[in-house]
Length: 310
Image (cartoon, rainbow, N blue to C red; front, side, top):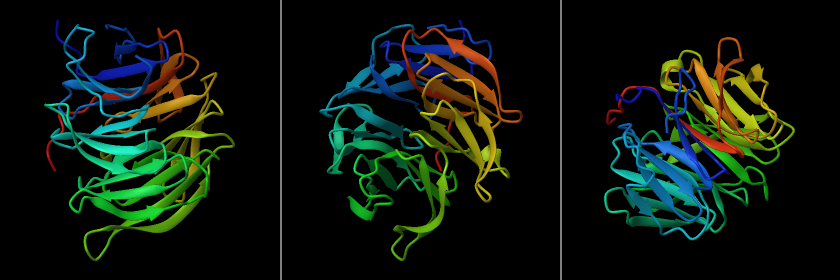
């Protein structure tokens, strides 16, 4: 049977990962903290307690293809180089790591000195940006193999989520106090990225669990989505950071969100055991994915063409 071209995966505290036909809502297919699909849409990385497991999307086997096991605590972040050459991760063990996808070995390790909650790869593919439980943001220069920049937007306030605009122009950090800090990213004299403060947004009264900037094909409209413990997701226009709409429907914390490739839809995962598909034009939930028996804490979607090296 041919696999659907749109891949949606959700993971839950019920220790399952579920694959869905995103359009129909049919489910056709470990505690997991984060999910990410490889650029070629062949594999799904599931980050859990001290390990990352890679699953074949096109296989019915529940067994992972390979496991990455060097972390010593919960893995909270995972992602891939644009051409799939390597994978990066961040863990509550206080480290950021780079992995050889084929062998499962850790190639590099960076010490954050606090539990790492979030890691993103700069679109230049040469810098990782991490945020930790102590409120530190660090830029890891992969060419120099060192930390090139450190920021503390709010002392002793955990950075829960980071997101970078697709063109590398902005970075947003969201914290436990419901605040988003926004910086312009400027290239320094030695190709080191510099942060220029742009905006401080009090987005929610509760925790922000995920912040996400809209993808390239959403332009000229640019949005920031913030998912919160207050049960809502808010959509902000990046031009002035005005509130465009509030997505209301989840009954508990909203842990994760992901845009469709064209920015027309948003998928969310919540402690109410469901994932929801929202249309950005109206802010309405047009589909509910039900099947998990405990909190749905992360989701991943790949509905675009296979990524090309940049």
